[in-house]
Image 1 (tube, rainbow, N blue to C red):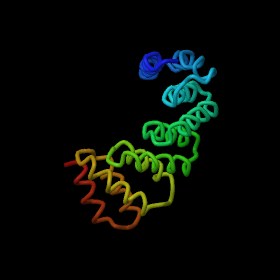
Image 2: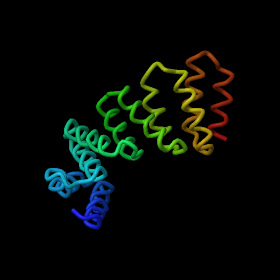
Image 3: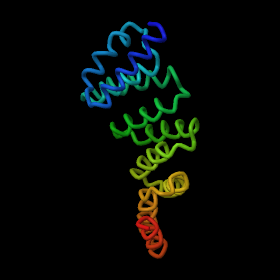
Image 4: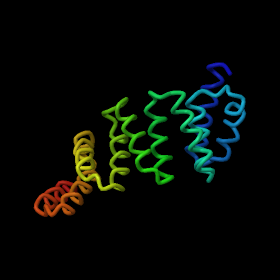
Length: 170
């Protein structure tokens, strides 16, 4: 597959995913995935399509393959984290999100994904650090402030929680 064909396939696959046409995306990507001509991003898109059609293990395997093919691609690593979290592999998701952050550290969505995974753990210190970073990267987003308030409440820091809640609604 040449570069132009690959780019056109990716664009069409993305359009299918954005419209929720997961089966159509998989049908489009499948020949290139099966004959080995697909690049990492197309394999990733195919994996996302399969994951969302209910073929979660097969989809995750494709996204993992894409992450192996392009270990420095933060978008693929983010998708890997999302798929792992969707399979309740919280530690695996946290690892993928951290790898994405290592490559694109100022992307609020990467920090938000990491926080969403950390919420499922008992790692309150890590969660707090992550949420503080996210609140600096996305100062108008109330989500990290509300989550920080919840953490403060859980640690019996009511006064801090009240300040955080007020900041979130300001």
